[in-house]
Length: 133
Image 1 (cartoon, rainbow, N blue to C red):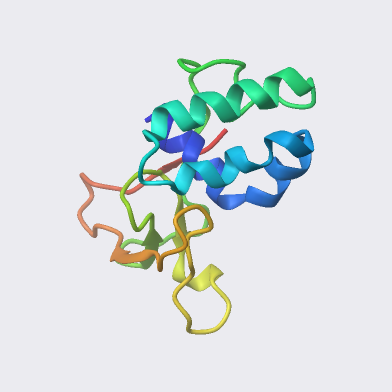
Image 2 (cartoon, rainbow, N blue to C red):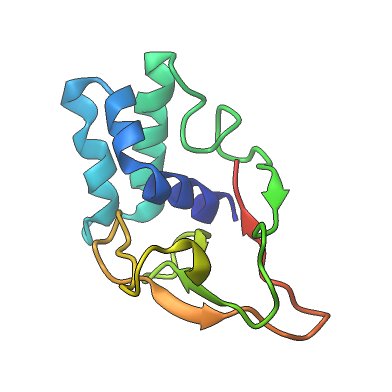
């Protein structure tokens, strides 16, 4: 899940990551959406550029890939509630419909596509969680 979690962090705060980078490296955030770039390689390049600045631990949260980000649930979520998920099934970001202003489907800030709408599972054995760091 670390790749999906890292991508979710960038998806949620792309401008924050751009501001942390040197001007010459700001394109690395946009490189995540390029179809000719493997997502892991693009995340690794972004992570390296971020850690070199000394302003952040990078996109993996603990300094390098393999760290174990904090796992949290979706605060305020109720079973069977609609959620929005990554349109490319690449990241672990999940938004509750109740947290999205208006009725428009949110757009993924990495891939520029509408997020997928799903419902949280209503059985007690399954409970959708989002990992964040």
